[in-house]
Length: 116
Image 1: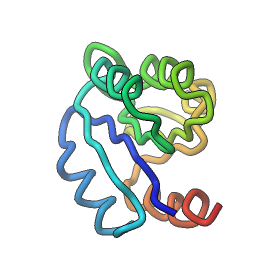
Image 2 (image 1 turned 90 degrees about the vertical axis):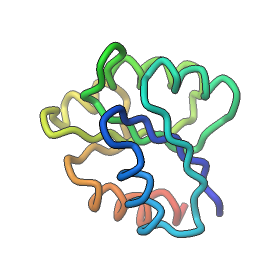
Image 3 (image 1 turned 60 degrees about the horizontal axis):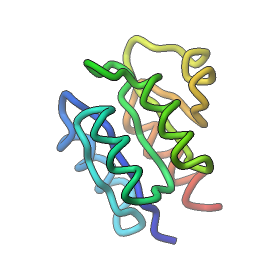
Image 4 (image 1 turned 45 degrees about the horizontal axis):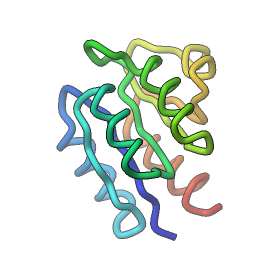
């Protein structure tokens, strides 16, 4: 199963793409976007299976981005990460999973998303 993944990260997008590529190998196709606004545009062009969202972005934060993405792609699975958000914030945004560490996000994708 090939997953189409949208990574939304404004600070270091190449790092996240590289980490997820290393962990998930050929099971994913990853598009990296550096803002919530751009993610909304991209989601209107392509239906993604999964979004990995940085919750500490500038103009349009992760919570706003997650809410709008869910309207565009209702069955989109969303995972969030940030050093300053909590699981309750993530649940409010409709995220399936939230963690502060990319390694744990990669493990979650391997075990819970790719195996379905």
